[in-house]
Length: 148
Length: 143
Image (tube, rainbow over all chains, first blue to last red; front, side, top):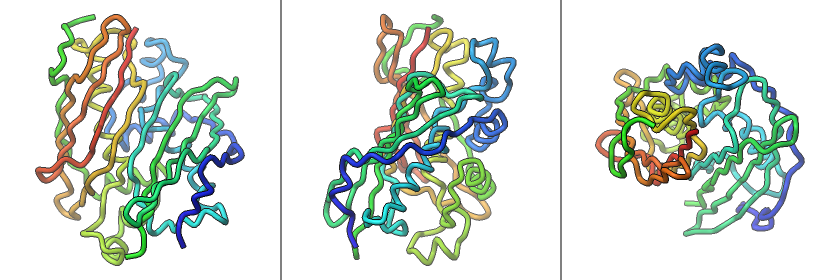
């Protein structure tokens, strides 16, 4: 089975809104060796002008994950998860994520490329807050290794 | 604004060790429970040299020295934050069950726009003498 080239350009339905919790941010911060008071201490975050603790820069992957599951579960995608390797990752923020945000993510397959027997699928997840304003776009390139 | 921002200046450096505990903790925090990140038998069965750190864990810890720099006295100014962050995963980080994996992170100013109050910080992340992230760039902004 190989990756379906027709995936390119496909947009998936938005996933259920993700409510960003303070303790989840703290847990993620500790797991990524963050010692930033902005991510751990609501008082420090408020003093710096944020409504609550600020998520570390890679936190959006937690929300993006559910959109990638949509892609992997797509019946005609042809993506064998056991052959998937993370190729690259990017986060582009309009503002930082803070506790209390309710993020809704929508996945679009930005491109499918073949290279030397492997396929590269670029998945772009756009996340907006409860007011519909853009917060972050997370872009992952998944490399699906071909048969060896 | 504190010190002058000079392209080429190293703004942060850090060495840290990822252990199997770190991987389990990250699996829980991120929701990525792929067993290649905590089970030797599974890692071996799919042809890997051992249990690997999540690429996203390496990406996550690599940016923290920049986050700390942004909030420090030597940082670019108040309200500093990471507006854009990208990496390419070029080499796996094999985490030894006993000794873990030592990562060395160096963050260097690649580009500065004082008027727009933005800068690009380039990260070099090495494990076992080789870089493990390619094109690791952090775009920072301040007030």
